[in-house]
Length: 158
Image (cartoon, rainbow, N blue to C red; front, side):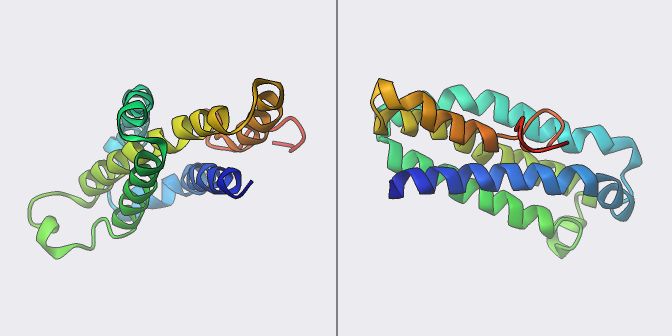
């Protein structure tokens, strides 16, 4: 059960990230003067999540679930911290605009996010018997962010 709670915590990180970023996008883009690059902020994240979801499954078969899930969490957190400092890193400000920085950092975050999303389902599949698996995967899927950035649940009003 402790492992399952860790999986839920990872999914909660991904869901909270999307729930925070979606309403804050106009302010972020305004602060970083990147009106024309607005869509790349979201697209960079989504492309890397989409590409890495399948890769994490194979990598976890080769290297094990724990190390690969840990890598996903660390990568996601590094991308999150760097995204928070976008436009305020003097060395990078010489070469990249703040908007380009946050787009790259969100792509790094997406590399970790793909692992959080796919590894949650894989780990639950390993932990529970087929009879119990559906119940526990439904708990994970309630937290999985939807296309609009909000956690999906038919019990939570949107």
